[in-house]
Image (cartoon, rainbow, N blue to C red; front, side, top):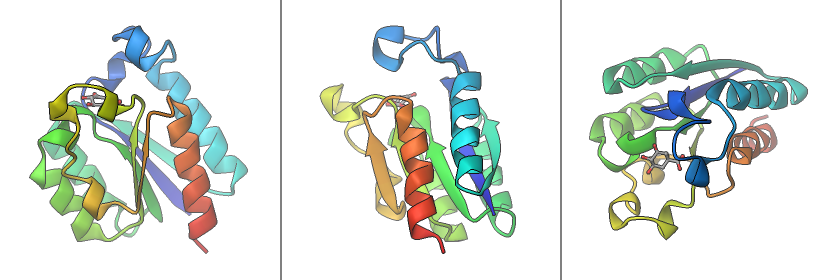
Length: 143
Ligand code: DQA
């Protein structure tokens, strides 16, 4: 099956964006590592990044019927988007919420996620390894 690897706003700037928080790996590095982990586990991976909320909603809808699971780092939309939450709840695919940084060590406004309660699991603060951990989770839980 296929895993949808979804990255939200500003994650296209990985590598140059606040490297003391997010590290030096680029989005291309993250997508390569995650795709390799997915393929090693017998999945194929479809990677998509968008700065647009509606494009992320569309991608989640399109995953229904084409993907067996979703790994999503929704960036700042995590803390604002009821629409993304409803999309995840609507497609009923196993979904892993990933955050590179430990959002709980950061500003108060990053402590709440609209997505967590509709996601299967949450991986926070593991750096870019969080995406691979997400693949591993889906590998262990999907039959
Ligand atoms: C992030 C954390 C969010 O609060 C932030 O807006 C991001 C990245 C992370 O991966 O740590 O864009 O999702």
